[in-house]
Image (cartoon, rainbow over all chains, first blue to last red):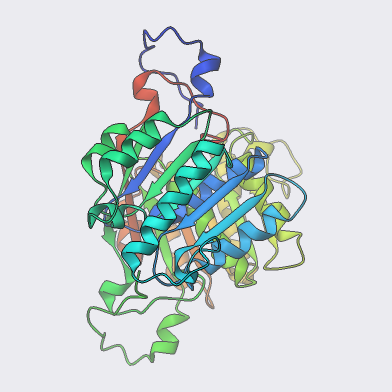
Length: 198
Length: 198
């Protein structure tokens, strides 16, 4: 595949080099498979660039995506590429010492940490996995998220995954991919398969 | 996300355990981003299961996907998870000793090796990256591909990526995801970005 020729050159006064280091906000949404999987695939490229990677898993159960988590841990500890930090809401977030009362509170604690890390430029590549759900459910203010992402300092790339991505987030995003479910083995009565689903 | 409850249980005489080890044929197609990226994300799960992984990159230039390739090499050599073999058409395929005249011939050589490996059950998880293009261009016979994939022995999972997936391949596949391009930075005149596009 060619590296791609820009369809039109924007009149933004930036050089190509400047445009190349602009922070990217990507959203993987839609009902199909591959939203998170593609985000973790992107993380492989970020790792290869030596960029610090922060994964924030906004899901209740921490047992999911163990394959991706183990792989990124091994990569992060390999001494090559960038370091990887993997944060799980399902385990109560490592930085929260007290008991968390609800999923809503847990999601908010996650977002507060993302805000702190963006302000501190802790990572260069963020996966906010399943982050659309707390937005969709009204647990986290969409306008604030858009504002924080728009105003984030430096060149920090952020990938948000999940269904029902709110419109203001899609408007902010530079790259939006919708995964459409065409056919899925569960339709044919298959249950999730080891190595394929997790 | 829940592990999923099968929408209907098929009358195929198989146990859930048998169904869980059935080989999966997946196709990632459509004009959007993330087709290959999601395939390499799936490979992280396969790696975590300890499965041997074979990647066949059916593209002319071998310089692409260097991030994913480096990451999977490091994982494959980590002593944890499964081993990884990465085959590149762009470098003339490692097993072909003579000069290859054309991309068409190169694509056919790739498919011949995939057939040999499927017959020998060399890998447990295959990524046939951009394999739809030689099919779409008529370089490789679609009916033969469908036949070989349908009749492959054991529990070998195969993921095919690329646009223009031929209909018979979609019919054969257990899992088809279409990546739809909603918004892409190149539309806004940005060129490909390091760490994001490669």
